[in-house]
Length: 440
Image 1 (cartoon, rainbow, N blue to C red):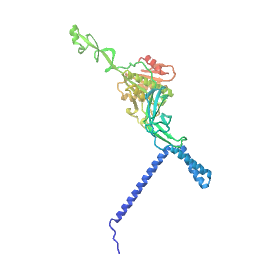
Image 2 (tube, helix red, strand yellow):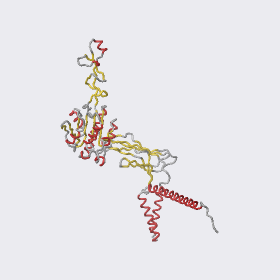
Image 3 (cartoon, helix red, strand yellow):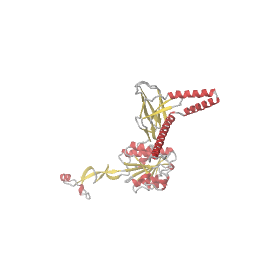
Image 4 (tube, helix red, strand yellow):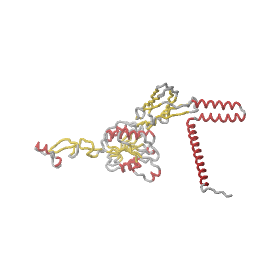
């Protein structure tokens, strides 16, 4: 007797097999993902000491039962009890609410910043003890918080001293629940990280008046001209005066030709170039003084309403340096809209490999910045007079160039090298007197 197989019987079997395989794969994938997630949660709370105790427990129990060694079995079960008690400290969720605030986010090197911490209990139950950690830079401030009653609040204020210029990350706040001996730990993060800017020290220097260029949108000066925006007075006509300057109403009243006089408006575009190449500084102290000099010059110019550009080298990789980088990528323009923004950017600069020498920075900056009338080149004691003259030669003709060489504790001096004025200062306070000597 012959049997007839349905035409779709083979297809149905393949479909059932494919469905079974897909279901098995999905089940295995779901189980593995849950196992991985559980393992990650476990490793996140178990401290190194906890792993050591867990290993001792496993080894002691196995060896104790295999070798019938009662002492090892006791050690294993005692360790198990310790682990269970430690885990009991993490049962339940942390109901604390922690906040952090910094009233002043900008300080000067050597000043202190206050950091306010608050921990509250918003629940209807008393909360147990926790530990609060506040990362401050590379350090961590730890605060043990006692048990908080319903609606209670714990507050504390601590201060940190800005010992070095830079940007100090503070936070985020972490509440820590752990057992007394450090077997397990659970932490919860609150708020976001806050940056504390430790500004370089700056001094008040004389107003910079050298390098003015005539400009109708500039600042009125005491010099008079026949054509400008700021009206000053009238005077009698003299041969050579332009007829358009005649004030006809006054002429009709006095019977003599009278012409207008204006206060000449001028502006000054100040360029400050800060060296960053490590070989241009002998010590870290030299570089910190150079940053303070650049900050003092820039903030003074901003306060005077001058156009100012403060530039430094961008960090270039080996390929970019070898391929002659473009001016847009080689120069880092620091913010000069306000003194605070400029000092914020100066917190982030540091000498590092891959930066250009000051001559190359001046060359690229001159290609991008037009109308410079006065330039300051700020560098360390290892910058030679030859390199400074070469850097000054990259600026357009007519630009007044002053190099400020920072050499701690040296006697301040001033010398002329061609058209370049070189100021050497030993302390930041020498800058003001040295600028007065140059007459800038």
